[in-house]
Amino acid sequence: MTKLTAVGLTIAFISAMSVPAAAAWDLSVDEDPLEDTKIAYISEVGSGAVAAFKCWENQPDETLFMLITMSPYDASADYKDEFEVIVRVDKGEKSTIVMRPRDFNGRFGLVAAQGRDTGVLTFLRGVGTAKTQIALGAFNRVMTVPIKGSKKAVDGLLKACGL
Image (cartoon, rainbow, N blue to C red; front, side):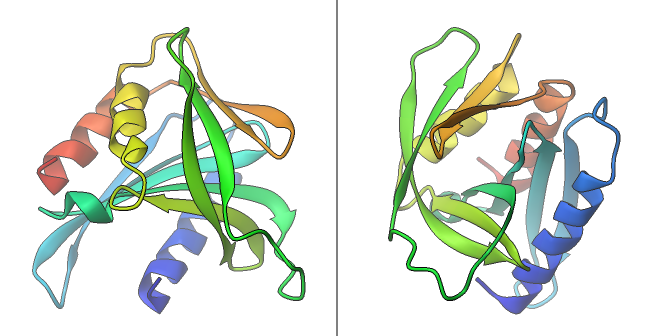
């Protein structure tokens, strides 16, 4: 992860944590000044974590799903190399996404890329069609993410990145 990406995710995390619970999914589209391609990012605060997706124009395998917790990241800890996160939209089938731990400016988080786990884009599209709930199972607990604004945010992200 580049330093620019880490800074952007930190800003988004702090912003997301400071908004009221009734806020909707947030879409941000920027242009990469080195590559002249669009970068899109969506996020929403859930129960105990921030769920986020990030993509780069015409690079579907680089699409990321991130789950950023409220727990501090301990650089001296011996975290597992991979964590399985169970995802479910509405009453649909449960899927598992394999994610890797990351330090999101002092917060423990997980990240998965479409090129490594093909469930990322499937889950992203599911978030865009959610009618009742988005559920995530990780760390022996279930977290939910509000659906308000998810369709508009996902549509905008898919369009910006040509997915």
